[in-house]
Each structure stands twice: as structure tokens, then as C-alpha cells.
Length: 250
Image (cartoon, rainbow, N blue to C red):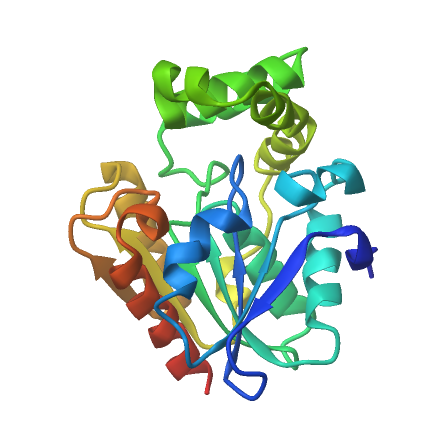
């Protein structure tokens, strides 16, 4: 198990409510899920900044994907929960469910990235490889933040916020490096599962989500109009996705 005591973890909702853990993606943090949490007042929702991101930067960058999985299991402790994950966080949810199905009641996976699979676009694979090969993780993190926020959004950040974003670079590069090799066999997913994607996401991400759902033999859940960051832009739809995952795991 990892040292989850060094991570930034918060819990919301009634202590006796159905337990769900939300796992954020790369170059993100738990706070981007806050509008989703507001729409789940009856659930016990656990949020945490993954190692190397946000409030968990001081825990140090992860050594690899296995440490992220260990952290999630530490956050769960002995509790059984549904795990809902966004993008890169899907790998953590899947591997945790494979390692400890007695703790993971079910998984909700929003647009899982699969650069190691044949149908993933070559251009996207090359981008991942360039990120991993870059010599300055801080510059990579800054470029990633600008791609999400825009140059003006980046300029509006405080000096402290920009420094923290750059400090997330080592975690981001480590995350991307883990996707260069096959991570698992989708056929090995045995817990109840739902795959979510946005109706306005990248076409290749929607295609991959549909393909993965077929491989796993689980249902697909579409949020009309949502992009890849659907939890931030379409919290009502994403909250419905969370509820579906919880229902399947009950």
C-alpha cells in the first residue's frame, strides 16, 4: 500500500450513503469534480488529488502506475466502493478492480485512453511519446495547462498557481510513460462496468470508448454535448453517469 496520509483527500455527503470514489485524470485535480459532487448529495463521495497533482504535489511524483493503484487502495482502506474515473484515472480504477474486486464494487470509466491499442490514432501516440521524451517536465506541464486554459487563462493564474502547475510536470510525464506499453487485458475486467463518453468529444475518443465497452461487454453511457472534460462542463450528465455506475455496483 502507498502512503495515502500524504495525499489531499476529502469526503462529502452522509457517512452512511453509498460510497463512491472519483479519480481525476492527468494534468487535473479533484477540484474539477466539485460541481459533480454538488449533484450527488445523497452519496458518500471521496475526492483526492492523485500523487504529484494539486494538494498532493508535496507527496512527490509517482514512481509509476502501480503507486497510483496503491494510493487508491489506501484511500479505500477496508471499505467497498464504486470507483468512477476520468481519462488516465481509468487505468487506476481498472487495475484496482483487478487486484481487489472485493473492494471495488464496480467502475465507471469516462473516455479511457488506450494509446497501446492498434485502433488508437498514430498522431496521438506520437504526442504521448514526445511528452515522455521531453527533457523539461515543467515546460511540458505548462504547455499542457495552456492547451486546456488557453494563453489568456494561463496568464490570469497567479504566480503561485503557475508554479504549482509546473510542479505537476513530473507526475504528468510519468503518467504518460505508463501508457506506452500494454497495461492490461480489457477482457480481465470482471466487476460491473459502464463506459462513458461525451457527445462532443474527440471522434477517436468516442470510438475507443465504444470499442472498449464492446470488449468488456458493458454498457456505454453518452452525455449529449459533452467534451472530454465532461465532468467540468456538463456536471448534470456526469453526475448521472456516476449514479449509473453506483447502481450497477450495488
